[in-house]
Image (cartoon, rainbow, N blue to C red; front, side):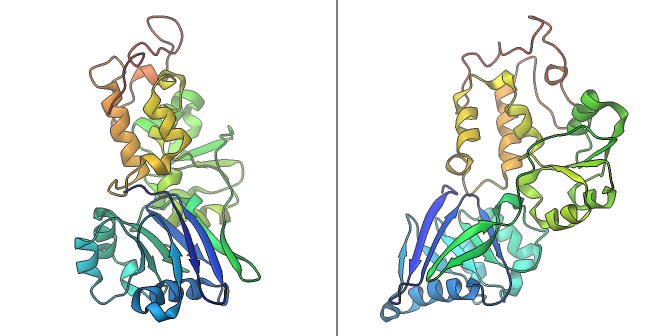
Length: 302
């Protein structure tokens, strides 16, 4: 199941929600009376009564997920988009996270809380924007896609990622030993570096530190975007439209990019490992004096 879908939910009174989801997990936040519960109720009513007059347009089924029977539902149903209201208490549990991650489904989660058991992107946290009867989603957080050298730089990575940034910026780069600790290192003249695709649970704390942020999709995503893979069609497709490439069965964008990078460099001088960074990613090519692409020239991994 792809993770990018357009959804239209409309009732007899022409109250309308237009939503585009891009990843396996989409979070909707906001104050009371902003339309969150209305959206959930309309989807729930559509699944229980034809007389409710709710019209849902999407290329896959969109259904409300309730606590009763949700374990069976997630274990046996595939190819659906589930919408979850904020009173769904299992959403905060590791058991729910495990079931959701394993399932071939997408999730729209209405919540006011962070969900550290689920790897979701800070770019997929929204609030509802309303204009009369029409509702859409608006991102809460800006992009943090630009790196700026600062007096102190802290990355969540410990191994290959840390080596990479230290090769570029020296000993000013240290590690926070994971994304959950990253905000503890926030300070003036400090850049915090994390995997944007899975840091959604901690983005509010990171922003509140006042530090500069650099949050690429993942470290492996960053490596895939360099010139070494410029001729690889599957990398071009991933960069241009990740929601069409990443399947809902993938645990995360970070895991997908890691596996892709390992597969693409297998049995080449640039063999990738998370534990230790290959010199091919940080040093001039030993063959041509430039960053080489010899091993990807005609190589496309299915």
